[in-house]
Image (tube, rainbow, N blue to C red; front, side):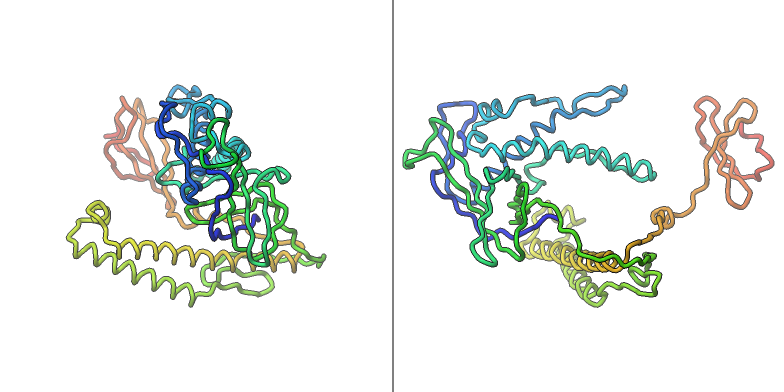
Length: 394
């Protein structure tokens, strides 16, 4: 598992980064520079998202005639050097940051292909393929390779604080008039909760103020026990094993969080009712109040807190099982199929010159559907036994 830390603040040192031209199509337009941490981080995220979408535009999909076609009408085949030259806001982006979308886009795409194939094999909804990263809906993120210390270097200040330093330089001819050089450093200060292991890259989520060190998980230290156990998921108890142990979630804490969520949802519903809006969507379009948006953010935070509690409990249970047993058996149940109502099976039988759709029921009877012989589609249902057919089925 990768290590996630919290970003405390960002400092920009050295030269003033060149953020691009005010008009990308006019080389003589005003040049934009800034040392503001928020503007610099947003600039890196926008440049990374742009390059990611350029690479994503090369992907293809099957069209109506079962032939591969691009997923968009505007396919971008530019290389990194061409993208830097044509897009002024990419000119000063560090190379190891701008090269990272090439591998991450492939991983994202082919992981979705494999996931859809697995879900289809289980007769589940495969979901859609990944799309472009939206400027409005997606979080502001970027990734940067470590590459044996060439960039994204981690420096530890003390037990609980450190920094990730991303170096870059302005292109030739775009040095700020007040600067003595062209090199700059973006220092991302983070708060630590454990020692940082060797990592291959860092991923920054500026929207959530989070930074992730991508590294391999540590193996669980254990000794051979020659024990086996069976695990079963349940409703009354979250999990039970064959040794008679029950694993329960902290229901009192989760119930208290659920009560806080319901209290805020009732307040939101009361605000919508007093505004005389027809629906939640209409109220948002009309203009939601600050208190309404604050409660919305609190509800999201409470849901995230409940999920963290559940994940923490389940991870502790699985770790204890791995340490205590050498063999763990889990029944492969189709939970979605068990929770679904039984559906009758539909088949078509030929009676004379017509096709009739028959639903065979578990009791031995059948439901006959009259069919249109020209379109072979059921349009009027009649009931009967499985042994006789209605004369109206033409």
